[in-house]
Image 1: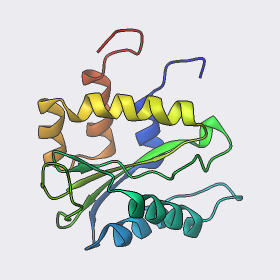
Image 2: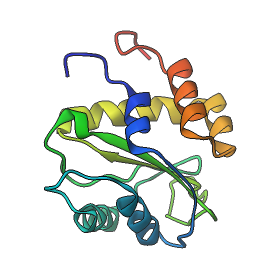
Image 3: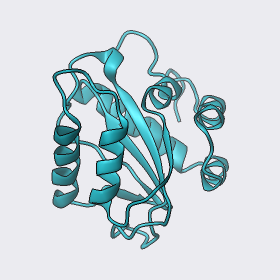
Length: 161
């Protein structure tokens, strides 16, 4: 991408789902996929099945009560369609996290290229290691509050972190 990757804008595009009523990762992925207005060439069923298939390979739980589900390969064709969908399940879910914590926040990545996907993962990894950010997430913030926190906490890409 030519301009700086804006994680806040990607979250604004994907939105925030609060109190998703799912008891398994698959149930949460169904809710996430069906919440999105997707391009005509991509169905919610396809997003759902790709998320489930990726989860079957190895858990996308990363610790600290968070998971970063994503398809095994980019599903979107255009950069302006990319998004991060943030989902807070009603009850935390056991996803065999490396730290054994139940997952209470999902950051689902839908991207148009492997390069952007890796950039998003890197930026999210930085954020979820930040104690202030984790504290904000515990309150299940709205899109506006979450995006504000992301933009305040996340350093510009040209700075090392």
